[in-house]
Length: 378
Image (cartoon, rainbow, N blue to C red; front, side):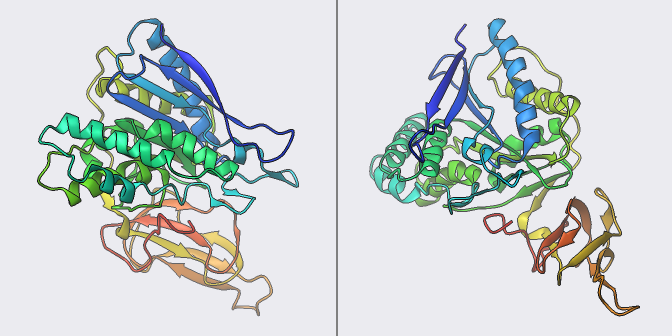
């Protein structure tokens, strides 16, 4: 058996305090392929930790049976900082209270350093190029200053993930159907994972540097490919953000179901020995991020939804009515309408909103002016 449990201490924010990451390692270090799986970067997204809990049991059984043929790193909670953030008995795990913003934004942009490091050194051997680029990624990460606890968290996570072939970042939405985000170039590698999970929507985003965790891992490979088209450079890190429904969708049944889907994906990718059935039929194809409309409240008020998750809606259809409880009789309600047809895959759980608050997400086929800004405030 080669299972190992590790704890990595983060930079202490103050005397007398300690925060650490727990890593579960399966397989022999350096074995290929490598998968990296983390849960709950937004620490208030509990369905991800429930899935990781059940996946840990499956991986332990596979390890005991000698079936782990690659290297698998599982981090059951990726954000001890956010796990500790309670204010007036309310858990706030999405933004760092010290001022670091959304935990899943502003990840290290290693692209400039990597492009400079590999220039003039790439060969016509794709495997040699992969090794060269991964060495450059690790060296670039090592050069970054660690000033705060959040810096040390991002450094520790990326030091593990940027050498992986497959990176699964497990999250959940506020109140949503199961959906994924990935680069458009990765659809062929991610499609069967979406099928296994029963995803209703897969959003493809070309992304860029300095954005979300999955982009920070996969986009450098796209950048090197584009800068050096005359060299064979595989996209050696396939990453995706998996949104495991909504925050309230926490149960052993769902966690076991999601863990089983991820486990079968790992078998199919050669990280775990054994046979698995063909992936089920996909429920959806890829949707460009610009075809995902985000509806926002025009003013503060109370929401009365007129649709449900999973509904197919038409352009102009009323999605919700915004109620002003102090308005004159007959003027209390303002309709919020869909701009284009599509599938409703997110509806806000809380029904009291501020002006401009996002209240629904609709996956369509038409580009809209109100697309989902994946690297923005949402």
